[in-house]
Image (cartoon, rainbow, N blue to C red; front, top):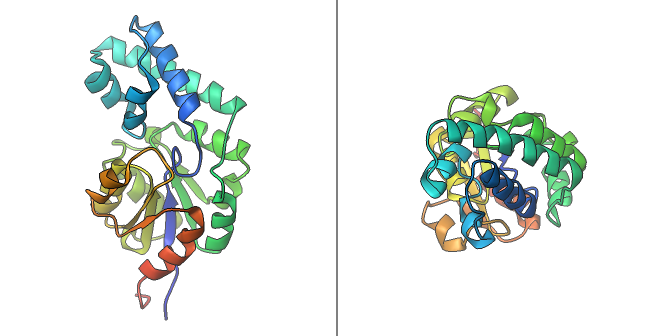
Length: 221
């Protein structure tokens, strides 16, 4: 008998439109460590990548500057998302349409920041678990947060689908053994997602329930 997949969602660019707050917090962080602000167009393609990687590879920070910047950004981002949260249009309805499938949020941001942002957006009750980058050893694109969320939901990774807007989401889901859906309303171009071979692409949140149903196993094991 067919059974529902557990659904794991990325947060930034998938559930919530946080780019303005993220970029503001990032540039304020750069000022603290003596770096010049970066244009939004240069920052946007990095959202969804582990912050430590962004600071080292994009900005060129090293050593204690990375530690200082990481702590500063966590504080500033949490403050920004405690004030302003925008849920993507159609997401509340999409979450309702996926019920009663078990759902979790999987993000590289801190767990407390993610929970507060989802709460302020009015969608936290949809999620049985929220796993942030501080809850695991390795962040996405490593599979650790995806596998942790699946475990907390009582599901096997192969009985989950990961929904996200960046290549790091698709890579993390594939490494964990989940099905993957790339969404096109977030912060990456279609071709960037297609290059990683997701199982499906969604152009609108209203498509998610149908795609998840199509990806579920034909029999329960």
